[in-house]
Structure formats: C-alpha cells, structure tokens
Length: 104
Image (cartoon, rainbow, N blue to C red):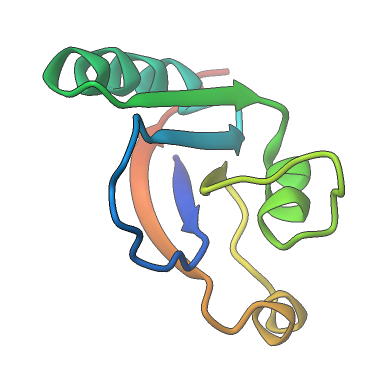
C-alpha cells in the first residue's frame, strides 16, 4: 500500500481581485486524481488548478523552495518530510490524500 501525501505551502490571505490559480506538482500516483479534482474545481468556480507529475522528490524540493524554476501551492509525495525538511520549512503541513496498491 502506498499513501500519497499533499504538502501545503503557507499562504497569506489575499483580497480577491482576479482568477486564482492553484499550482501543484509531485508524485505520479495521485496525478489523475488531482486532474479530476482540478476539472471539478474549474467547473464549480472561475479559478484554475494545475498539477504536474514530476516525481515525489522533485515535488518536495519545489515546495521547500529548492527548485528556483517552480513555485508551488501544494506538492504530492509518497515520502514523508524529514526533520531537516521541517527545519527548512517549519510551516509546511502534510495531509494524506490518496491510497494506491501495487500488485506484483
């Protein structure tokens, strides 16, 4: 069994003046789930949500700010954050979002 986690970056409240775009990246396991959620989110609001499957490690690096080319609102990962990760980003939060099974 593999549990996929969502890592959230702390964000400040902003007065809404335009369409909001929520950007995520990371694990491939929950990618289809997040794409389906994005479609429903777009249907229910004028906002946008995008998720790119780049791998768990790359998602963690991006959400922790170690990837200067990506700025994420959330990252998907099947790895837990380490003590060093939490030290670098003490406000980071993890929530289980999907469970998958692999049959051999």
